[in-house]
Length: 339
Image (spheres, rainbow, N blue to C red):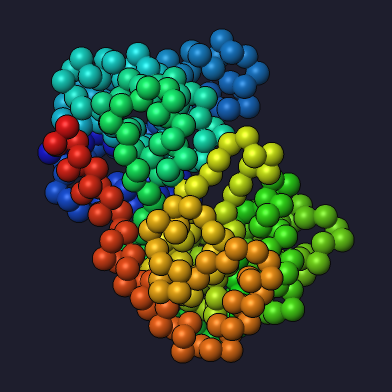
């Protein structure tokens, strides 16, 4: 089967696009990749004038149609959906190509997607909140298809002595910070009595008086470093993004949920709806509901490493058996073939 996969690849930073592209090949698909952010003009120039933005966007869409005419795929899969115009989807369908959209981000970025999604033959969503929202726009063939892990990459790694010294913590958090991440900041501020390590962009912008500043290890880390951080810690903590104003729901399980579990690290995570649908608290990971419970759970599992190790092992086993990107691609292709 020939699949034209459209997404964005960062040459300096491994992302889920790399894992999905690899998974299509692992299923035996003849896969052609299209870079859906290959604009001619830099964003800082396009943003100044709508005329330039529209010209470059149409140019990008023409390039996609040219690629489709050349490659002649049976299936077109668009990851993200922001830059592919509704008319382009209709033209791909007129060529006899089945079209599928796989949404990625929480729905606060959904304006363009709500306009284009109804044109696709199939729409897959990383979070169930996206399914709920797109139903309101009369989108058909909606399916929940969460993030996943790549077991060839996301796995426990042996660390050198210098790496152990660099990354060792009782508790780690890998994730970004902006003023929108009040929930994440507040949770971590409860854990400053421990050997806490924080990695990720934006933490250098914390208020000067924040007691988290001294726990920030690095602002710029790559996935190759994340797996070392997870392998060196006792417990990983994930606090999901939420719209603090409550305007836009976010239920999806962060990609780091799957990546952390695949590294056989005990994961303590907030009570995110999709996480609770995919995993069992106390068996695959541990869910907390408030700051008091978070502190109690951290204390308990640091004092009971055998329990922590058992849950971490069961979590890794679960993601390898059910939640790899190959599982996701197999499920997607099965739905498209039936459709």
